[in-house]
Length: 322
Image (cartoon, rainbow, N blue to C red; front, side, top):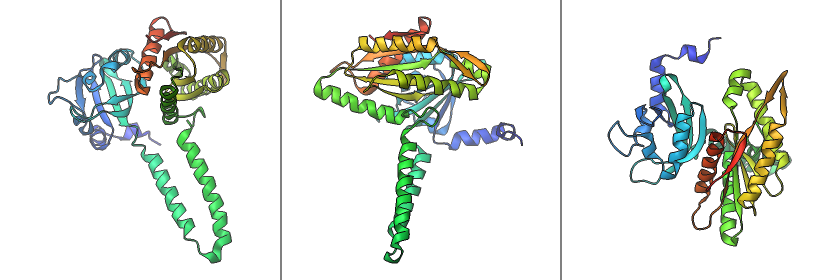
């Protein structure tokens, strides 16, 4: 069977880009926009093609965005992205994909637009309505269906909250958990820290050993993180090869001590997968919540910037956000 990429023509690709709801643009490594699809057109603040991608993000994103543009690797993160110059920005799932000539393909999709999940919920709602219309004559059968429906609903709830690869809380769930912890920290003036954990040189692992082994590496890293964090700390998959740890009632020093232990544990562990021995390391960025200055997303941005500092300092280590 031919691969899909061998069948689709350039005209087909153009039609796809112009009809999908995701915002797609081709940019240079300095952020200059080269080309974009129709969905991206409404994002521009200025009606001129010389506008830079940087102009569509907040100032707090500048350093991290520059690092991602120049990393030369596939990058996956969440950020607030402006629709235009007047309406508020929305939270988007963003991806940088390096292509030829040093250019980068940028794809942004609103996190609220999870079509597959919405379809699942709508399908389950239709089942619920069907079960509720069962007559009294078939009450016993209806009861059995009710039990089945409840099991399906529980399963759907788990699917909506758990990352299928690592079985950790997924991006939406861990961000929702962080939002709740920030509200508690503000209300009770309690300490709160977060750590963003990135698997170093993960692209090289995929390129050298294949994606199936890369997936197993992520599963084993997730397992080590889950086993290493204390209660009530929470760890979730933030995206790609990145994980997020929430540390309630902890300052940055306690989070840094945890980060040091995690780096040491992973460094000293050889991942054995399908006859391959893979050595991996972590880069971790730590940030403590600042009362009156931080929101949940600025806290994440500060931790993300600290993680990139750990990478620039040589990887296999951690850094605390200023």
